[in-house]
Image 1 (spheres, one colour):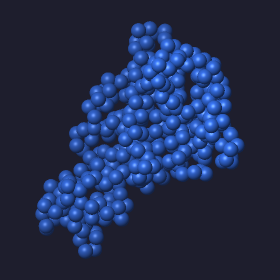
Image 2: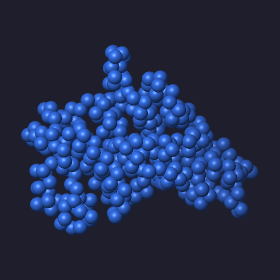
Image 3: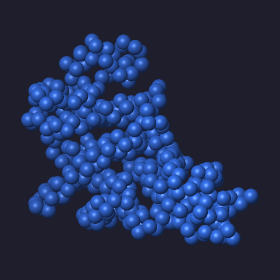
Image 4: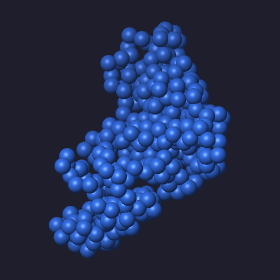
Length: 356
């Protein structure tokens, strides 16, 4: 993002007057900006993302939103628009994604401090984390997971950098304002999400080992980091056993890795039980891979693993396993859907309530 000369916003509207007038005149409103979906009747407009040209002038204060307005904008998007079911979720996602991207740009332009940045970016992380799960089965023309992952990683890196800055300030000056219990809980949740999102990367493990004690001792973080350590050590049984214990959104983040983990488990069994006389009970594999029976049968077809006639056991023959087959695409998981069904989504994405 660009970082022009510092300016402090004074606009208290979701969309500055100049942009609102121009977009209404040019009929450039998004569906979610029309009143009750009525064509040509403007409703609540939200400032859209625009790239700045190299020779662009420094934004005027009246065209930049205040911190409070930006926070209200984020809350509006993650409550009113997110729960608007008049259109498919991928369209709501596109609209929210664009408008949140502009909020991020204004954070940089106005050079908000670490605490201000954290409060605005944490809900964006939750939104992107949830959306990449919710839309994981959509075709590429409706949802691009690579772009979502890229922006999620950028937001995470930005927030983690702010956490580091606050840690440094406290170390230098013991009189510095310490985080509230609520802020500390939010951080532990985001740190846990970062670990699971970056499952298998050395950078995440190093960070996990060097975090302040109060984060490392948090129950959710200990669970998430334990799963990451087990993954690093190749103990996939403990990984699979731990995943369902994770909270809703973090569990949803882990879903992106599940098909890769399932494939690795099947490959391990192919080497361990490579004997026509040996079989592995289907019931055991169902528990070990966190799948329903029909999905296990589909995995067997995809990777060419033989089932006994009664489907109560599997034969693992190394030469038959289709190692050239692509890993199955991530999908929505029944055990995660059950977790998400028990929460009020806006409340969780805005980090007002993280646990049941």
